Figure 1 (tube, one colour):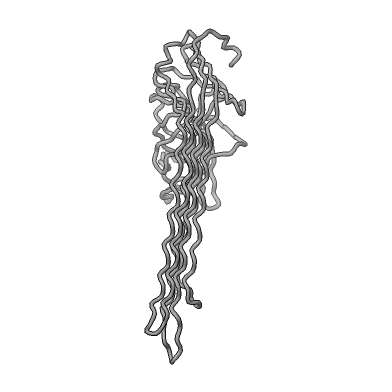
Figure 2: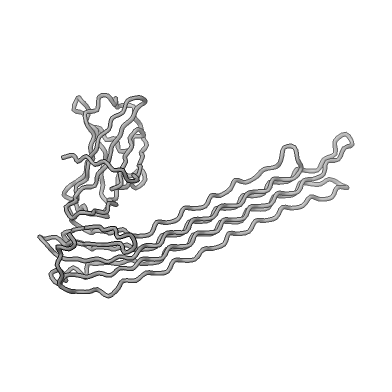
Amino acid sequence: MKFVFLSSLLLIVLSSCGSFKKINVSEIRTAYIEYNPIKAINFGSNIEAKIMVLMNDGTEIDVTNNKKLNLVSKDIIRNGSSKEFKIVKHPTLFSDNTANVSITITDKEQVFQTTDSIRINFKGNMVINARGVSGRNGISQKNRGSRVLLRDGRHAENGTNGVDGQSADNYISNIWREDRFTHIYIKNQRTNLVWRYKTLGEGTITFNLNGGNGGNGGNGGNGGNGRDGSLNEGKYKRPGSGGDGGNGGASGSGGNGGSIQVTIHTNNSQIEPKMLYFTNGGHRGNPGKAGKAGKAGTHITGQTAGRIGRTGITGNSGRNGLDGQVQPINFQDFDSNQFM
């Protein structure tokens, strides 16, 4: 069964690469995600899957690594060009049991588009990913060369700074058992955003509230070399000085880990040993490397030597994020209807 899901939210775009020689887009009947529904499929889990097309003549073709395939989803992400996908959806309803994806196949002016879903069976381990977003890396600069007309080498530019990782937020969670399922209500205390998970409780339940890692600083470029001194038809040209190396960009700081307060209903106290918590502060990025100094041009007899360029300065280091904490677990009766 196929589920159509259109979202106005920011979507994650995934592209793949490969050959497209054997497929006529106008002859595609449908496209779908092929996976093993018997294996454990839970929120936050990884699954093996591939994208298949069914042609009008009944032929089925694997297009997972086809360069004309484009997948758009806010529910799943792909691990590079492999056939491993990760379910990243945060359900807001306990009844939610699908991860949806838009499939587009394009060849010049021909376009085929459809939607399909991976069905969650709530088996195996579940991961609630609430970690902070890691910062982007700074931009490393190009090495500079010698000037065409002037004598001195070009000065290099500085690497840009890495971006700080985001801190994870603080959460409260209520957990209970109902109709064979462990229900997990989790609320962001800053934004009041609510997620609602359920699982059969066969595996672990992980709360990932780590802070985001800081981005690396960009490397400074190397300075250009000065031109050699020369004597041509009685005219001297001085040796050029080397260009200065660029400074490395500062590394981004790690975000702080989040905190969580969990209350478990007494009807599900046996789930507590299966629960894992990660609230570590994010790691700072690596500072950008200093650019090398440009060399002075070679001087001939009677000439003053050119100046060697200045070596750049290594970027400053950010700080590691602070660890969050897990508040003591509460076990008590409560009315779960308030969290539905």
